[in-house]
Image 1 (cartoon, rainbow, N blue to C red):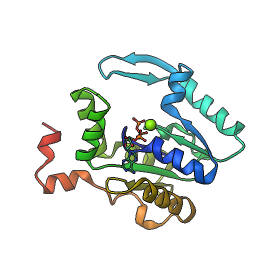
Image 2: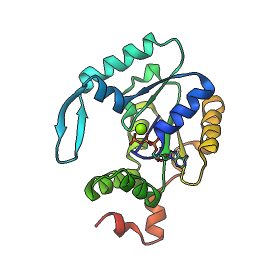
Image 3: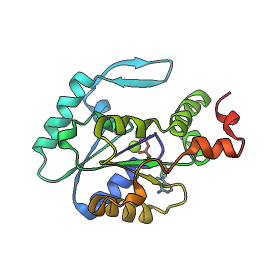
Image 4: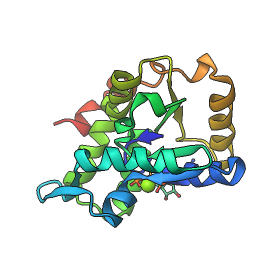
Length: 186
Ligand SMILES: Nc1ncnc2c1ncn2[C@@H]1O[C@H](COP(=O)(O)OP(=O)(O)OP(=O)(O)O)[C@@H](O)[C@H]1O
Ligand SMILES: [Mg+2]
């Protein structure tokens, strides 16, 4: 499961686990706990994951798990495709996402960079690049309750409905039509 920071990945993974009894690998927490980062990007105020160590560790955890595993994180496309059944990307309207990231106490610059990534759909782009369109689905959680999000995620896992295929959520054209793009890119 992927999506920009603040889109609700950890929340949905935990909610899904209470229904499906899956294991969860939270990439951000794993990197932090096992110090699987190569350096700290002071400019972005973020730890940069060391993929040479992280990817084999994730594979090891998936292979060791007795249940199905949900891997969640904003760079979840690092999971080798042979281990992936379905990819769910969570999307959130830029205005709502800005508020959620501000509430985390993030700097204006960090909020802006992450909201820009959401507008451009960078997590979806990366997932499509790695896994192909057949595997990748999106949920716009902006106006959904947590329960509704879980129920759509289960539908995607079991039925893979076309309705949640990529290409339908497009903040760029929405904001452009509303003349709002300058607010985020100027
Ligand atoms: N479906 C939802 N509807 C409304 N609010 C939500 C929903 N899912 C999560 N939230 C809220 O959004 C915030 C961010 O959620 P969460 O921490 O799960 O995001 P995340 O994608 O895991 O972020 P990060 O990448 O920073 O770990 C929380 O305050 C959470 O309560
Ligand atoms: Mg999280």
